[in-house]
Length: 168
Image (cartoon, rainbow, N blue to C red; front, side):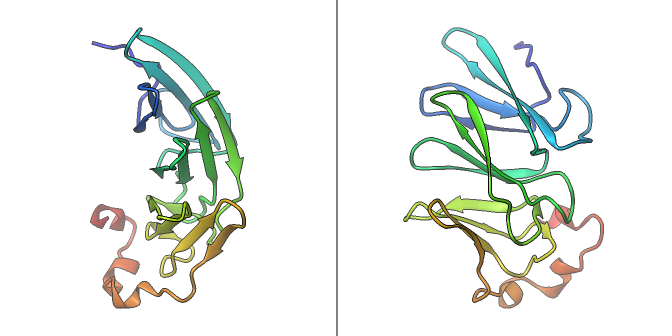
């Protein structure tokens, strides 16, 4: 058994063989404030390095791996107001908080990297669920108003009530 330093709610394999995981705002209880306990584990030597990140509670966020190996994390714990976005750089074990999502944020979003290096985020509980967002590393976030999920997602998804996240 490996004694993990926090309850790992998500994780990523890093390019150098380590594993990045994080909890929410506390190491072993439910999330409360806008901060995250994270850490890397090096399986080659069994070492943990804890990295605290203030300003972004990543409890219900989504991640995507950027082409350069950084971990892109957006969204978070609050059902309709989780606008945060952060990047983890494995080369120096640092988190950098970047521009907030203009949608007002997403809870349990889906994010993926596009071929040009931009990040595309959609769905999740959000102030603006019906329109996805795109993050360009040079220009920041912008809502994709030309894409409307009405044709792709049944209306009952958008009005699914307090436990609709189980449909994601």
